[in-house]
Amino acid sequence: MLAASLNVFGALGLTVLFGLLVHFVAAWEEERVRRRKLQDAALALGTTVSALERDEKYFPLLLQYLSNRYSSELLRNRISDLCGLLRTVWGWLASILQVIVFGVVCWRMYQDGPGLAAFMWAVFAISVLSWLASVVFSFACLLVTGRYPGEAKNGRKGLAAYAEQQAPSAAS
Image 1 (cartoon, one colour):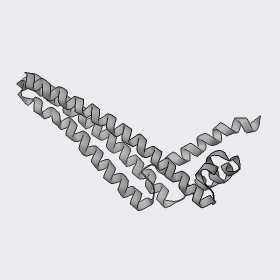
Image 2 (tube, helix red, strand yellow):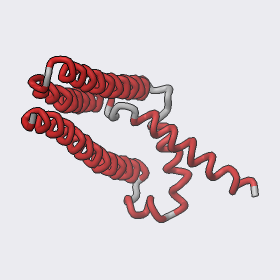
Image 3 (cartoon, one colour):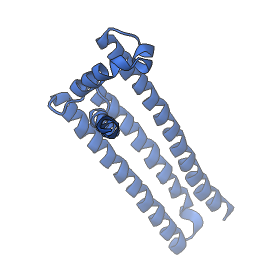
Image 4 (tube, helix red, strand yellow):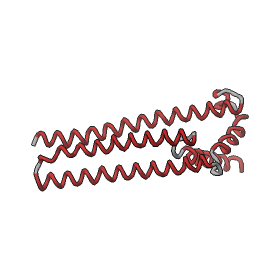
């Protein structure tokens, strides 16, 4: 019974810790991508990143640059959007599969005894394999489009949110 408990709680605990690690790595990567976008914009506009961040005269130029860069008219952006959708669906399917495997293993342990607890490690394996597939897919999308999956859509959303935020202040 102790071995079964160690298998169940070890696999689930490691899966949660791995999920947290993936979350922190994703946040770090998102910040890195944000800095890369600012550097690209600064180069395109012939200025420095610090000037872009603090000098308001660059805001209209930066908005125009980003609007052109993330335009839904560009094929590379449409492919990036599709890749983002596929990666999101893949993540949801992997999560659903983890829940199903967890439920099946719990049910089988209830019916057949704790000897099947080692199969709980399949939940962790699904998590790791899904993450690896997502990373490989993301880099393939980056190589093909020059954008991460969903980067163009997120860029357009950010521009729309900024424009909506600025609209009330412009009207007053």
